[in-house]
Image 1: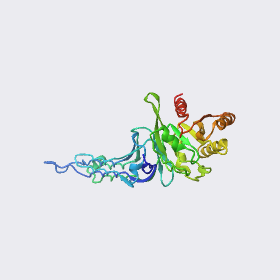
Image 2 (image 1 turned 90 degrees about the horizontal axis):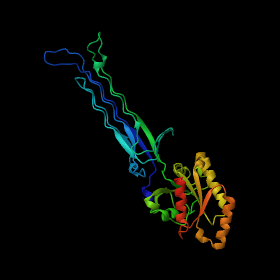
Image 3 (image 1 turned 90 degrees about the vertical axis):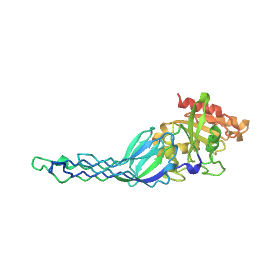
Image 4 (image 1 turned 135 degrees about the vertical axis):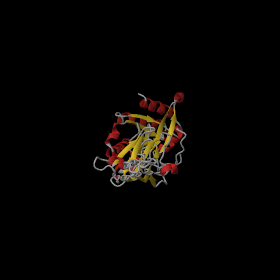
Length: 333
């Protein structure tokens, strides 16, 4: 999937259908000139429905969809016949889609399962025909109910990436490079910050035809929880990952400090993120000679007793199989 095709935020105006009006028909046939009321009910207006589709990975197909309107209900007829229901409009979305009210920011619901359906805008109820209003004192009522109006809503659809492993790190930590060597994904790679502007997903092939999904999230900077850099744009994608893989380059000035800044940004955005399994991976270890490599191992043993860690090189492809084995064990304890 190219970066331009990854869309994770769209605004849509939705309107359900109006209910059909009830009929005021009076029964007439040969030899019956003044029959009683037999007006049928109006049909309900169409719903606007969101439906989960596990085969979708992005909201790209909704990028240019600005308005979604369901059909109106049909009017009631004679012989107590009910009007046809309005046509429902079904919008298919990828799993992990969050729906919010554009005006209030209120979270309405989430779509997390395949073929899960939620009514976003409910169709208006059809009006009752005059048959319902007959009484002993008014045997030929000449009125019926109009149909109820449908609902109108401006909504925001946000996608939170569903991945087993989320790559977390500062810009230029080597996340895209790692994703490109572990999977067949082709993220944009360059030597300047914020090369990755949108999440990239890749499937990591494991032993015996098994696999798991890895997501390269745009780089964190200090203050991201307050919206600096790409701010909340990427932080929401980390919420659904099972494992957080913290990637810190071996040439970082202070590896422990970088890790703690990353942790702090996640905590300020959503404290529940710290409950996820964590793994610290030191990248770019091909830059180190044997002596520096041993020094780094000693440093890691002293300063990272509270979390699992691994040293790798994506370019030289050192330690990658051991990393996959470790991630698989964490995902399948």
